[in-house]
Image 1 (cartoon, rainbow, N blue to C red):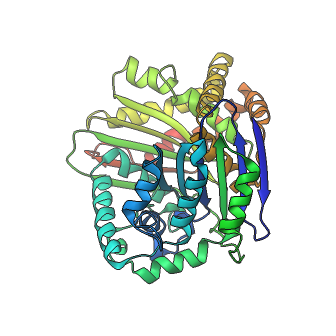
Image 2 (image 1 turned 90 degrees about the vertical axis):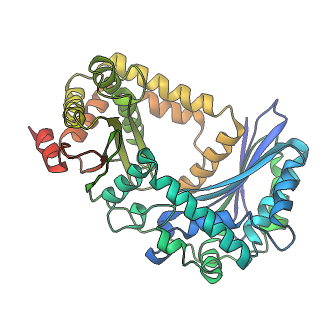
Image 3 (image 1 turned 180 degrees about the vertical axis):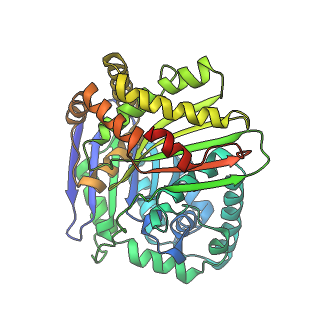
Amino acid sequence: MTLQQAQLSNGFRIVTERMPGLQSAAIGIWVSAGGRHERIEQNGIAHFLEHMAFKGTATRSALEIAEAIEDVGGFINAYTSREVTAYYARVLKADVPLAMDVIADIVLNPVFDPREIEVERGVILQEIGQANDTPDDVIFDWLQEASYRDQPLGRTILGPSERVSAFSREDLAKFVSEHYRPGQMILSAAGAVDHDALVRMAEGLFGHLEPGPASTAEPARFTGGEYRKAKKLEQAHFALALESPGYRDDAIYTAQIYANALGGGMSSRLFQEIREKRGLCYTIFAQAGAYADTGCTTIYAGTSAGQVAELAAITVDEMKRAAGDMNDDEIARARAQMKAGMLMGLESPSNRAERLARLVQIWDTVPTLEETVEKIDAVTTAKVRGFAERLASTAPAALALYGPVKAAPTLEQLQERRAA
């Protein structure tokens, strides 16, 4: 593997990793312009803009954008998260210059045709409706809102329907002018790539952009709280979040290993105790999610109306038990799962390009895989137990419940159980 970085005079950054033996490459632009960069009146506009990038540029129609990549057997896509918007493609080695040109075109030259805005507005409203009709999707938006109340980080990425219905061409153009500056863009590529050639292409396509002041996101504050919505559904959906480290804190590795051991697989404590032994649910898991400056350890389960109270109580009890008796074998298994998941995932150039972009966005550099593995291996059972103790007792918490949840405990009741 050959990892290289460069930066243009205007602040535009390039990071590449050549993967010998591959005949294809993943390439994309990651922009520090996600949901948490929106003002409240802009909520949902980063995602709307992502959709509009594919609806035509000054030189290509929407169909021509798709055909340019698919004619050579590649694919192109995009996504919006709370911290970034990404536009990326996967193509064969010979078609990297084409992919680069198309991606630069959709990022820099969208025309925002009023007719296409209305078409895509309808598509996004359908997407919002679909998300709202999917309980195990929408509950995580509500949990996020409860965790980070009255903050950009707590708002839904899709935005509320009323705001999406009102966005204008001028609103889209203003968001681009505020956030799509060269210093907030990262070109990341992995696979069959030539670093020097990509730097030259980047200079030609992005070098003319004028640098500007970097927009900053509001620092996150985990507030905690409860969101409960009763509805006649087949299952009661339970989601609990506890404040955890962000990406810039090395304790993130402890949080991730703890989450793996608690609820990351079939051998985990929650799966074994709540599903296998007691049969209280079909799906239950724990995961440690993180942003640049904050994070959440999240536990989710779907169960019946009559069993949600028992499931919630056992979940808290298992968290408390983990603080006292999580053992070396469990930690070793969780470490192995974490390392294997990371390393297997990085056999994909698309995953590798995304990882490079995120690391450059967060730290402006890319730690080696060896450094990351060393940090994972440095997580001891004592560290995990200490982290588990904090989560089981004092960490700020948020709770979201959806469905037939009349019998479900309140957050206050769960807090009392944590303290008992």
